[in-house]
Amino acid sequence: MQHLILCGFKAVGKTTLGRQFSKKYGYQFIDIDIQLCHMLGWDGDIRELYMHLGAAAFRVEESKMIKNMIFNERTVIATGGGAVIDPDNVRYFRRMGKIVYLEASPDFLYARMQRLEKVPAFITATDQQAAFQAYYQSRVHYYPTIADAQIDMLGPDPLHQLQVIAKEFYGQ
Image 1 (tube, one colour):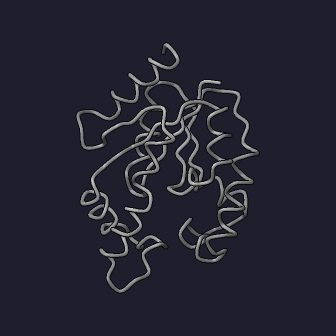
Image 2 (cartoon, helix red, strand yellow; image 1 turned 90 degrees about the horizontal axis):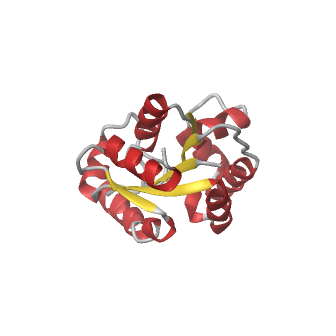
Image 3 (cartoon, helix red, strand yellow; image 1 turned 135 degrees about the vertical axis):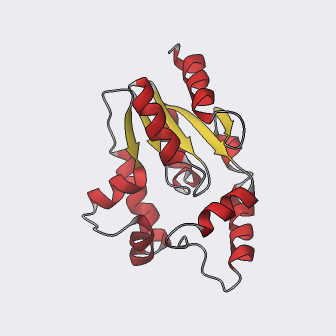
């Protein structure tokens, strides 16, 4: 199937870009975080679910949901920031379509996270910037290794970049 799986750090713009692309080019759109909350009957947001379940149980539930996803239409899938850390999830995503890494500088990401209503669950330290930097460094080198393509979210027109990638992979 011709799916595009968007991965990258929290607040990079996976959901925003995925929705824009889907609307403009006729793809279905799925946000894994939103789907997971629905699947588990959770009324709160993904941060609260993560805090409620704990990291390990959250990842187990996320992986179960990912492995049960079936799409009949072309779909853009916005993953949670950690969904692609699990090699089994990556293998499943590879069978579904192409993985696209959305990249941005740590300064840009940290500034975006500071504007969020709630600080991400992984930032629990008193020194939030140091906690963010440590978390960023633990993942930034991993994402490109699993991606079929990469988009610089600070570069010119990420929506157009994703359309070029889709055309390259799927001729659309």
